[in-house]
Image 1 (tube, rainbow, N blue to C red):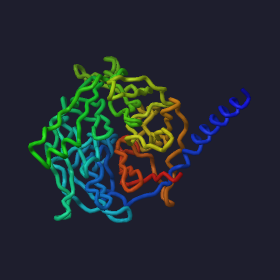
Image 2 (cartoon, rainbow, N blue to C red; image 1 turned 45 degrees about the horizontal axis):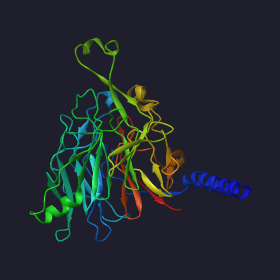
Image 3 (tube, rainbow, N blue to C red; image 1 turned 30 degrees about the vertical axis):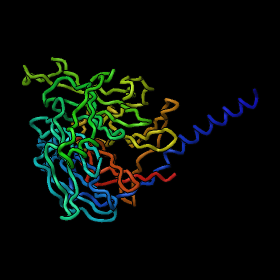
Image 4 (cartoon, helix red, strand yellow; image 1 turned 90 degrees about the vertical axis):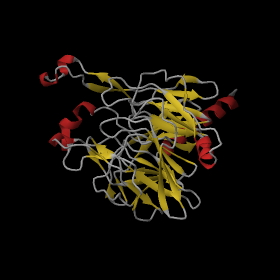
Length: 389
């Protein structure tokens, strides 16, 4: 009995030590800044090609190019795309998207970037654009309508690839929607790649899965472990009370966000959702998917925790930025732990926490390109995190 107690105690201490050290597990670096000095949020990003490590591509997104929103600045969507051939290189202008677009789902698979859904400021879309690499012409290719349309238009959703299937969760169907989506859809990207090479191959179709058991949400964070889809947090869309609306807005429904602090796992084999331990704070709009760090643990990058949400534009230039804290989820123990922080400076240069941007696996590192650092404020900084232990 004594020996068993010692073994259990040692195992527990090892787990705690591993969690404590995990925050130091990332080495942070910077790649070249995006050519747009303002940066963008909601861009599509991923890796094209793959025979030589592939090329990092960032396309689309939105920013406030003239002045910030609290000064009446207009939000502008972009079609511009940039390509980075090597981690130490400089960004090159790539083939643009067919139209300005952002806030969709990015997925890298089969040497292509699948840009699913999104919006352009006036509408949400259900279509997919695939970005590929033409080795002979040495250029990025753009293929509109690369997948069948989603069951519904959607923006502000989250995505993750499990095996060869892309899963898309949550989001908003229309710009003026007063309730989010609680949907989970998936499609076989391997079949899409095969179908492109052989038109006789059956075209993949979107599969609708049981909806998430929690509240409908936008901007959740997804991860994957052992074939399961891990869905964490997000924000519920909630109509504001009539008395909270300005008199000039009579007859117009306005909405706000309720930040969610919950987590679930979906098993594709059984089609069953399982409730998981709740994260310590809401994890909304964090760069995703979550990063596997070994031992069945997932690292969730910093997010908007909602503490300052209602005062976002009110604070204007005084907004301190989003929290730097990362969070670790242990899939075997169903527990959360502190996961360190994004440093205040990288290579001697101050950096801010970016949200509303993808996290891209590229050449042994996780790239966090551009993103939103305060309400209405973007950054051209491109951060990388490398698992060092």
